[in-house]
Length: 106
Image (cartoon, rainbow, N blue to C red; front, side, top):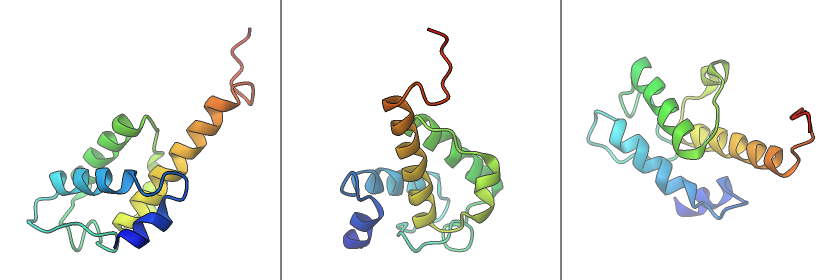
């Protein structure tokens, strides 16, 4: 599974994957090790409240904002990882290019 995790995080070598897996494990009510191919609802027993808890934890831990509309297609742990990485990469891009739509007025 680590090879898949490496491919899911090309910019950071998969360093976020274990952290995300651990977070998902802590929120899951089932005594099962989450894997990248695990489905949040079917395999890990997440309900809608737990998904929202997960979103809040991910937003806080990775300093990102996950649009609620983006959650409708997220079913697996791998999709959660991809979403976090995509948003974190976009936030990093914004921080490197603050003039691109930031409008700080300086």
